[in-house]
Image (cartoon, rainbow, N blue to C red; front, side):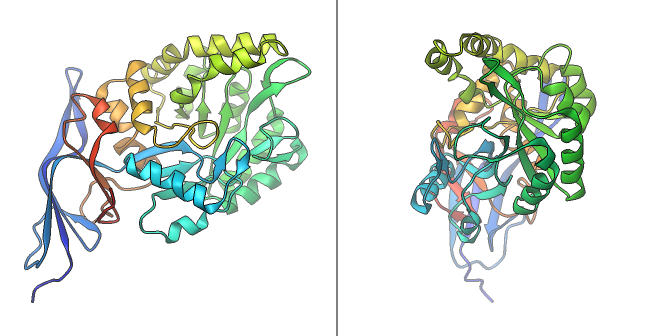
Length: 373
C-alpha cells in the first residue's frame, strides 16, 4: 500500500552536532540525508511514498532563543496580533524553540498553532516593589517571594524568572533586590515544584547570594568577576549573556547620566568588559547559551546576531553554534536531529561552521515536519 503522506527529503550535510574534540577541533557527526514523514525525523528511507519534496543544503536543529519575551513590548503585555507577529519573526529567522523568560501575557494559545515556534515559559517576572520596568512583573516584598515563586512555577513550563537586581533610586546605582534568606526559601520552593529558577542580573553584588541559594541560571551575568566565576562553574550555573541587549548599555547610560551618574558609569563599565566576561565564564566551564532578550526594547529575529556576538566574545564556532542549537536543546530537555524526533530544523545554503553569519540566511525552515519559511 502506498502512503499518501507527503514526505520531505533533506539532502546534503545534516549537522547532528560535534562529537569528540581532538587537537582543539570538534569532530562533527554528520549524515548525508534524512527524511521527514508524519512530522518526524527518520534516517531510513520510507517505503512506497507517493509524494516527496527534496531540500538540499546544510541542516541544523531548529535554533533556540533561550531568552526572549513573546507577548511583551517596552510597555507591557501586547495583543495577540502583535504576539503572533513576534513569534513569526523568530520562526522565520530559524528560532523554533523559545524560552520565554517572563511575560505578563497569556500565550498558551500559541501551543495550538502548528505554524508557530514551541515555547517554554517562565511565567511572569517576579520583582521587588517599584524595582523594575512598569507593567512587566509581579511586584512583591521578600516575605511573599516563596509563595509567588510557587504560583509562577505552576504557571510556567518548568522555569521561574526573578529580577535579581535593578537600580535602587536611593543609592543611585544597581543593587540586589532580595535578602539571602528569602532567596533560599524561594528557590527551594521552585525546586519542590519541579521548576528551575533563573534571574535577571546586571551587577556584581547579587550573584553570590543567588548561587548560594541554588539558582540554576543567570540572565545577562555582566557582573561576573574572578571571584564569582568559580562559584558558577562549581555549581554548574548556566548563563545566557544576551549580548545583543548588552550592546544597548551605552545608550541607556547616556539617557540616565544626569539623574543617576553612578549607575550610568557602572553600566558603561559592564558594557566595556562584556566580551571578556563571557569568555572568562566559558573558559571556566560555565555553560553559555544564546538568548536575545527580544520583546522588551529589542525586536525579534536576532538569534543570528547573538551567535555572532558569542563568536566575538571568543567562543569556538562549535560552542557558539551549540549555544543556539544542540546544547541549548539538550539543556532545555528538547531533542535535536535524532531518530523519531519532531522535525524542527533549518536548512542553509552554506556551511554555518565555516561562517556563522550564514544563520541569518535560512534557505528553508521546517517546523513540525512542514516547510513554513
